[in-house]
Amino acid sequence: MTLHCPSLRLTLTRAALALALPLAAALPSVSHAQTYPSQPIRLVVPWPPGGATDAIARFIAQPLSQRLGQTVVVDNKPGAGGNIGTEQFVRARNDGYTLLMATSSTNAANPSLYSRLGFDPVADFAPVVYVATVPNILEVPENSPHKTAKDLIAYAKKHPGELTYASGGVGSSQHLAGSMLKNAAKIDILHVPYKGSAPAVADLMGGQTSMMLDTGSLGQVRAGKLKALAVASKTRLPMLPDVPTFDEIGVPGMHAGAWYGFMAPAGTPAPIIERLNTEINAILKAPETRKQLLEMGAEIGGGTAQEFGAFSKAEIKRYAEIVKQSGAKLE
Image (cartoon, rainbow, N blue to C red; front, side, top):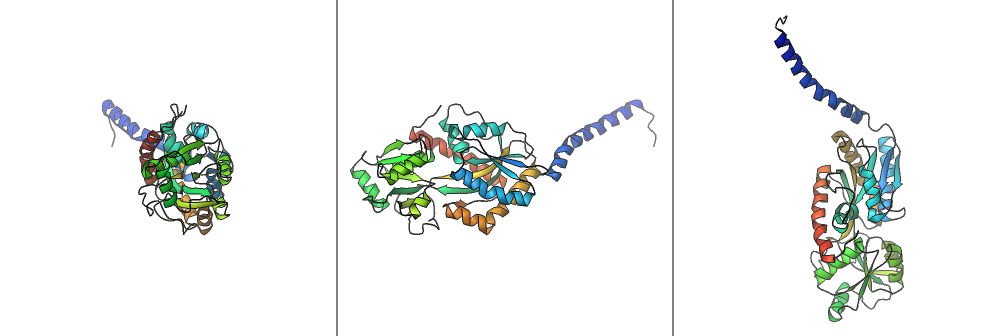
């Protein structure tokens, strides 16, 4: 059929262009997702090497490299409670070649702790998958006179302000967990902040402080250098089957821990998010990965990207109240 009307031809041409342009715009991202990954991937860890975040990132990075057929390079960018590395990450291209090992500090607590953050905790991120939570463990020196958590709490109630709890610094997970315990158990214990978890744990072992709610000293507990009295999780840990939860000892709702998960920059194509989610979920089910995570006291995660997104948003609100109760504020 021949069109003799110029205005009709012009209308049809415009309609065809209107349909073609969105399709053309979508083609690069679709093509990119189909060939992903075609180069190494950078996994930003906004904390120093050797800590729990770094360890969990490396547990996942190696098998993820094998499954994707591309190297996943762990890039440690520490500083300002994880904010420096996270702020650098959100400026990366949203092409799937830069990922973040997100934590409850950077992506849940810090928005309430810091007056200036440098990133939006929701709008700048595309959730990929929840990896694990490491619960806080109530620990005391090996020679502590307090043999059970009930004994310690009862003593604290009779001697307000006498017992101390160590932390890796103001606003750290240990500080916020200690503040939660003060409110949940209705006890008055004194916060002693250190410049990092390592000196805090060292002084706890030496008896300079009374207790600590830590996520990274399970090794010292298993070596007999510290005693674990309670775990701030909903169920007992497989690695500490004889240590009760706070719920069991009459302090309900005392659930505290550091969580970890993968994030991509906002706007990362959905097929790439889905691919990463599928691969990391498979890794989390692998016996070797499960063994590594369980040995550090972790509760293993998994699930959809949407579930992780909903969880992280809820955690921002939850930590806003925790930070408010603690009175912590950082510049």
